[in-house]
Length: 206
Image 1 (cartoon, rainbow, N blue to C red):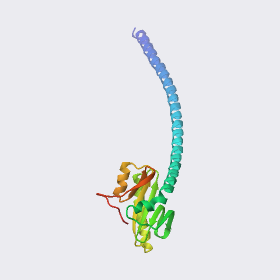
Image 2 (image 1 turned 135 degrees about the horizontal axis):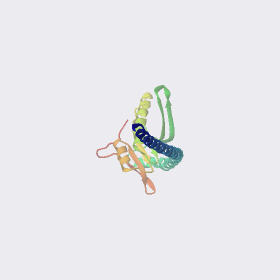
Image 3 (image 1 turned 45 degrees about the vertical axis):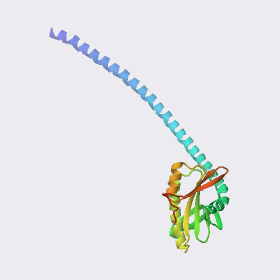
């Protein structure tokens, strides 16, 4: 009697197990299908990211080219009139130079100067950007230090001052430039104006 009772119980348990196995198999199949769909989405997303990155690089390149053109425009607008504007601030410069490259590899001095004005006592070095940022201003400080070193090596005892010119000058960057002791040159009506570091800021001499 006991034998005939255990067989049906065993078969019922086996059926349940197979039912669970079949259910798990269906679940695994659905999971695989879901994984395939997920992989497809990831692939499409990666392609979209690559395309977006490509477009961003192209945009950055175009912005850079546009910035260079603006810089050229500013340079040609400003440089011819710098002497007169600085005369209004008490400077008498006798010579101006534009797009000057200084190379002294022996002393690790390689730099470019957008414009500079000079006389027998002072030199003003002008950095021109379409939209100056703090990094540009820091770079100009470094440029001024290298120029001072170069001047000392050539027995040039004149005082060197700096200026930063731009089409667009945000207030924060303008204040930062003045804080570094630079003159700030920016558009004003049909011409441009020069803001001198005053008050708690002073023109810095190198």
